[in-house]
Image 1 (cartoon, rainbow, N blue to C red):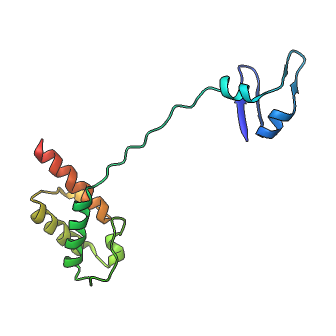
Image 2 (tube, rainbow, N blue to C red):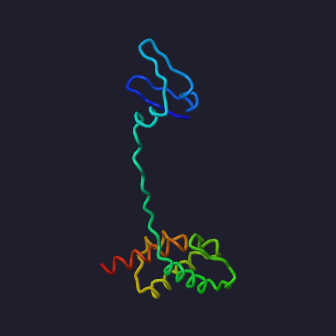
Image 3 (cartoon, rainbow, N blue to C red):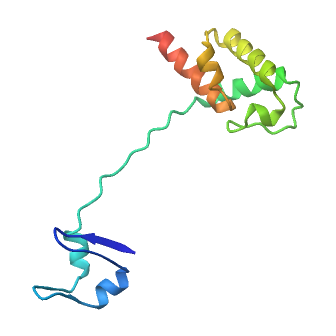
Length: 136
């Protein structure tokens, strides 16, 4: 469905109905055309989504540390989207993983940040952010 809003008129109709019929009122008649669609409809501003992405090497290193801490077999598939809870980690395991990450990456994770880590990717993003802040 297409929506058009004028200063005094508002209507909704399918694009097919708009192009194949005319809308009449006592004061005006509108027969939309393709040119009408292109020139008179204001363009919507484009949205850019910026997503912080962790470095692939950081994600791989975190995966190795998590697998080691949880004693997971090599054949278990773990990706950036994998949640620690899906791997059977409880809160104590998560604390131990964070401690191992701090040691391995030579960073310090505050308690509030540590509680926001739910996935491998979350941990890798936090590590990259802390390393970036440390380098600045």
